[in-house]
Image 1 (spheres, rainbow, N blue to C red):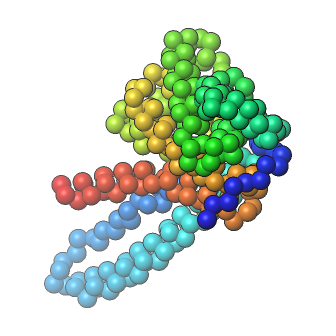
Image 2 (image 1 turned 135 degrees about the vertical axis):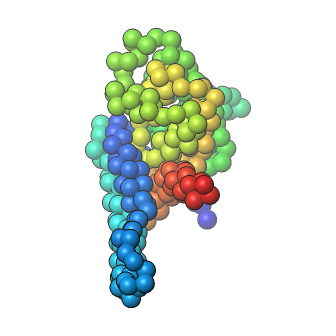
Length: 285
């Protein structure tokens, strides 16, 4: 049962502009899930039947052991990445002090117009360098988890659209504002895989939200698919961030670890699904 966070002041940490852990987790998971193929030498069936049966038994035992090790390695990698990301998002960046109570009171002071004020704040959030996590929690404190997540998502959709089109129009100015690795990452994405890829990026904790948006505008990926992946990824992330409230920066709390674990699982799910889908298509052929 959800309990609204208290209105005490607490620190929020601006997410670090890193993405190597996302690629590391994805690559590690996909490489681990590769099928292990074994082939026996073409021996005469009549003269080597007993030997081949024994070899097949040994291969079966070996494959079973390797599968167990494979899944244990997957669990270890995911566990390490969860711990790494929670610590990174909470400590290893520039610390920004935001007075949640003060901003909440500022928004609610406008009465019936408070939602529109919060929406406008979402439009200019990148200019104010407000972390995405802080923005969602502020909305949750002011309007409740579900309604606050809705208004926060709507405001961020507006700012994302503006950044996307401005960066696609003014290449030279915006190219200096984003790391080259994010541009190269989106350049490698095919149009078919754009929605699941953007979803994975958006739902992953610690990914730089606005840098990815600028990279999307610079690479001029299809806007509709880019926004679809963005909204689908930010919806569960925003609701879970709002649910955590002031516990968001307590990276060793059970609730925080569970939330980040859910987000990581959602981030790698599209890649695993596509992997097994391609495997099934090959078997049908």
